[in-house]
Image 1 (tube, rainbow, N blue to C red):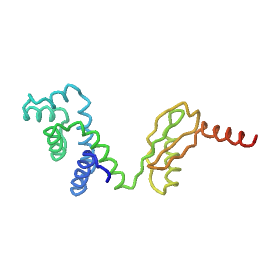
Image 2 (cartoon, rainbow, N blue to C red; image 1 turned 120 degrees about the vertical axis):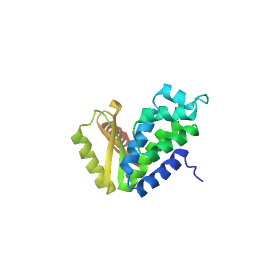
Image 3 (cartoon, rainbow, N blue to C red; image 1 turned 90 degrees about the vertical axis):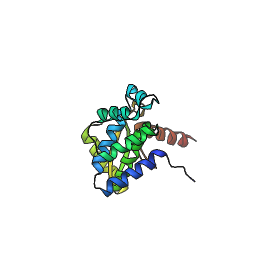
Length: 179
């Protein structure tokens, strides 16, 4: 039986609450602020220290994240109390995945040889969207080793439109033709 990460459990509960209260964006914002706060090593050291009283931790966290949904803040306090605040980045990631699924959006990880322009992202998004018959959001990164073109991964599907792949295919067909 597959094991569900604690981050996914918290995200599922948070998503259900946010959906019930029609506050999905509000929760996403709050979860992002909490996840961003974990980047501060000094703050994390204080929040994880058993010597710092809980009320002081609460005040520190409140100053760090600012005004957020009280239920999101309560989740953060629960994570602090359990010594699990570092899960907040995973919770945010899982929450966004649930939000995307709710909205019918797929995320495509695209690797390109050069940085993509906004127009390139839109074109790739549209083409991939037609392939999967849905809406696609492109998250891109650069890897010059693919020479040109792009490689896209949407869930289990891989689309390799790189020049490197085309050259490998050409090489393979030339070698087979020689035989």
